[in-house]
Image (cartoon, rainbow, N blue to C red):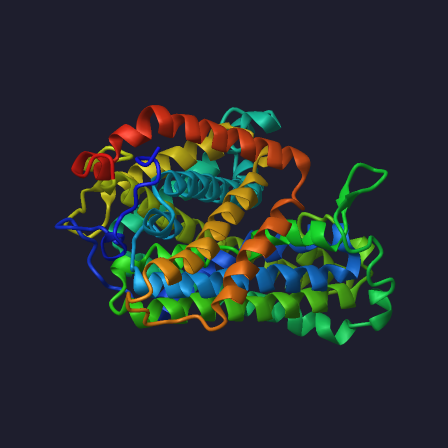
Length: 470
């Protein structure tokens, strides 16, 4: 079994070799990537889901999810500064925990990134489809089979546009992303500015109508603050995409920690402000579980015109989530191809400095998911995949402090045991607060992944071929 736990040297975890991605990014672009990934469908839709599960105590749920992600962000900051690896948590696990753990983490990240990109593309299509149908486009081509259509072409089209932008070059796509992130932040601040004058403390009573612990009520709905936190967690992750840009960062030791921690702090503050304005402006039951809670709240206070602006701007800026996650998934696939788990010819870097082949493969996979499969029924699995990756990063932080204490750490976490155990314990709590069917599908996914590693991955490993039996 020692071949299952063979580890890459910490200094080699970044990989790259001759076919290395050119460094073009600075911390403002990385931070914009993180904010673009984090602020997306989460705050635009999940606040309604969170309120449905926790009532006004959704504010506590946001704080809990944010605190857990803050610990994970600190762990990512240290590991990315000492190991500027294109594979993010996958590469950290390969150096800290061993090959089979790296495979599981990589397998979980594939789940996370694929489902997030596909889900956001389908969500974007939901806004675009009525416009296309109104213009005479066949309705059967604007929705997938699960909704009675043939294929969701708008979802496929937006994935193709984002993939094309990435193929133009990392610097160019980063500039477009930064501009759209500004639109997104201004949109949320517009919502807050128009709803805060309507804040009424009476709307916060009762504050915690469904209790704290996750539980299934008589209607079969999982409720409680922790149930809301487990779902709202979807609104926070995305900063891990920053760490996949390590190889393309000019000064990774400085820029990665700034961008990871900065994007987390900024997004947490924005989320808390938007959530407070939302639950204070109208009774929570009026927008609980609404697919468009922010626009609904604005209409309820007589701001229909602003609601239209917010909804339109959100749709325009939503592709930033696709860009960040499609970028991150392609870099994780790139790391796995370099390690032999995917055909190594896919790791080729084009003259424009982008992994063209792996980007096209990634786009094709998520386009099939978004266009043809019932993605809505399994989207919650993205949370489970992310939590597994975050737990691995927390453990790697502690393991590498003991196993490689002398490796330079440009960013060094203080109270490392508190941060590491906080990441692990918080993610475990959120993980087991997920619905039972989500946990079951996560188990099936990972058992299939382990079986695939046993019959394929362990023999394809580049490390196994170079140093057998290590």
